[in-house]
Amino acid sequence: MQNFFNSQLKSDPRQLVQVKSWVSQVFDLSDDISVMITQLQCTEEGCPPIETVIVIMETPGKPQQYKIHKPLAEVNQKDIVNLTAN
Image (cartoon, rainbow, N blue to C red; front, top):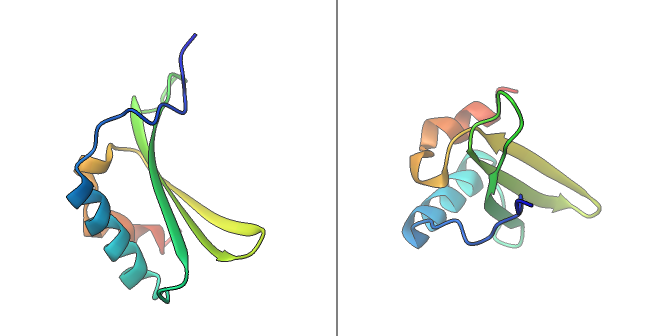
């Protein structure tokens, strides 16, 4: 059985901080808004092996969730900007 919520996927902590910063800037979030970023494995057909999931917890009980179909190490600022176009 595979663990789809494997938190052991390695990522650079500096990249995590950078992506969180981009999310805060692009979405114009105040410092008290929580942003959670994680990588998940996916084995469904057509799904990338690893995707980055971003959750913005701005409204209580209604988090905004976004997926970028690449590992955190490959996420760039343009990917974050593109989330606002959807």
